[in-house]
Each structure stands twice: as structure tokens, then as C-alpha cells.
Image (cartoon, rainbow, N blue to C red; front, side, top):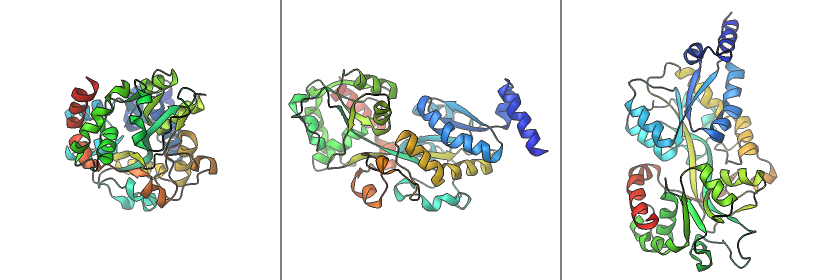
Length: 341
């Protein structure tokens, strides 16, 4: 009887019964586009197959969804996907439940760098690194180190994100003998890179367009976006600099006040299953965040796809997530005033 009722709910929602859909579904807040599809195709559909419960998605930008959650009298979603550092802003706003990891059996296989906080945990990982069009860059230009971005031959050829400059700020500080905490040490070096910038992208689609058209044949790029373009036939090369690449971990959490916490834990456990993690790697070229996922030999060779403890330890530049959350606004203001203008 229960399964029949669930089937009727799914049918009603499919036929346009949005009220029933919203009432009976597990609601997930996430980004739109390919990231929403990543979650639905690899996690959501498997969750519905196992539970009979449909998944509804609400989508939006990272900060837009945070601001909306802060203003809401009750949570709009049961689960929220966000970046590791912005997740701390949710947690500090008392918007996330403290996780009971005993209800997530697959948590035992989570890699250490994906254990972000008592409130949010990793769902997949990636890097921000150097991507470039080998067909548009002189063969003499190499990218063995982040320092190579400062090559005068790259004048007016580089793009980077305007919404989160933490990657290049942390790199500039590191190359200047500091780190993200002492980021001021890298200010002069980053100012010296200004002539090489051509554009600053506002979102994933904009980033892909800039390098695909060749307007900026070199980019501080999200590895998953780069591999997506490779699959679309764009000859983008992804580099692992000798200093490592800046680690990014997208995370999931249960919203405080959710009435479907048990289902939310089930969803998160499915997300961390080795089968689902393997599918995410195969389809999106992300790094698995569990140590028991199977990764093809071909994918394991890709820069930014980590399959060993040594890779996690030696190929990542890790910006403390809580520090990053606290400094993002300050960094963006400085970057806008001193680099973009």
C-alpha cells in the first residue's frame, strides 16, 4: 500500500501536481545547469529508485541561495549543496543541522580533506588550476609552475573568476613566501600579473566561453569545466603545477528544521557510496571523496582526479575553509579594486 501511494504521488507530480510534488519530495538546493544534472543523474535517481521518494530541486547561485536561506522563516530545502567555505557561512548562521555520522555508514570511507565540519561534508572534489589552449599558445610557453602565468608572452591572454579570487590570491601569497592567512605578502606579485589578464569570468558558462572561443587561451580554470569542454571537442590542456592545484570540495548538509532528516541521511549515504562516486568520476571527472571508489586507469591519470593519499597530500593547495569564508568578501574587494580595475 505504501509503495502504491508513493507511485501515485510520483505520477501526480509528473502530470503537473506541483503541490503533491513539493509536499512529498525530498527537496535539494543546488546550483543549476550541469551541477544540478550531476546530482540528479548520479544521486537523485538512485535515491528515488531505492526509496520511491521523488527529489525536487531548487537552484540558484551560491551566495543568492545563502542569502535566501538566511531570510527564510523555515527551510526551503532538506539538503543543501554548496562550496566548502560558503558552507561555513550557513553553519555560522545556524542553518545546518549537526550531522549524526552514524546515520551515514559510508562516512567511514570519506577522505580526511572532505570532512569539512560537523555540519557539512564533501560530495565530490576538484581543483582550480591552469588550463590552456595548446593550439593557441607558442610551444615555447610551458606551465610547469604557477609562476609561469607571469610569463610576458601571456600578456592579455589570461582569465580568472571574479566571484572568488581566493585561488590566485592564495597562489600569489604562496609564491611570495606566505599563505592564505598571510595573503598580503602576495599582493605585489599579484599586481605584477595584471597585464596578463584579459578578462574575468562571472560563472561557469562564461568561463567555458572565454577559453572555447580563444578570447582567453589561458585560464585559472575549474578542472571539471575543463574536462567538460574536452568532451565537447575543445582542445583544453589541464596542468598540475609542481606546487599543486587549489583544492575545491563541494559539500552537502541537512538544513536545520527539515522534516525529512531520515531521508536526507539516506540521500547523503547514497551520494557517498562507492558505486555513485565512481559514476560521478566517470561522467564529470571529479575526484571521488571516498577511498573505495573504482576509477578507470584513464581517469586516474587526469590532473585533479585524486585516487591516492599521496595525491591528496602532495598535489593540493588547501585553503582553510573557515578562513576562506571569513576572508572572501575582503579578498574580492581588494581584487576588484587592485586587479580588475
